[in-house]
Amino acid sequence: MTNQEKFIENVNQILQGVDFEKLDQSCNGGNPEYAKEVLGQMHEAFISAYGCNYLERGGYEFVELPAVIRGRNGGHVTLGIVTVDLHSSGEHWGTFFLTPEGVLDQGSESLTETDRNYLRENFAPYDYWYTPVVGGDIHVDFENVPESVQSLLQPSRQGQDEQQENGTGMNL
Image 1 (cartoon, rainbow, N blue to C red):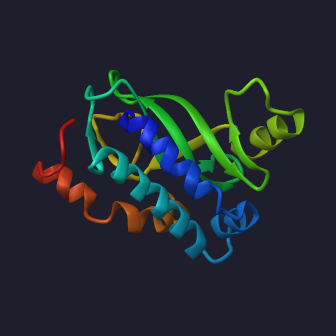
Image 2: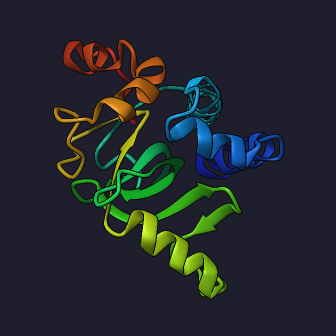
């Protein structure tokens, strides 16, 4: 089993216990603790699968990463999984959104019109910030993270930027 397959298996186990309505409320003005807990579990699933929380560009081709996602227009926030290409400079290839209706794959042809409208109304366009550190990704601005997103990311990313700067992360 590849690291990616293990991560997906780990996340699918976590998602079975997620209350998606509660998660949406937690991400958007409710008590953020539930969203932090779920994101922390997703981050730990990544570490369990990859053995680290730092990936160097070029070490893998495509990788799925736990993330916080925020719609640019309305500021709606959710958790999800983003797919990035580490052979490039971290180019984004797709997103799985955790919504009140469950997990929605942005690129799926099986999305209903209601699902498409939900994603369009809440997340078109959107920004994302993932929990692992990815060296060389020029597409994610960790210098200007909105406060609502930063509070969700903080427990998972605490100490990681120092690891990257000190070279103590793992180059895969």
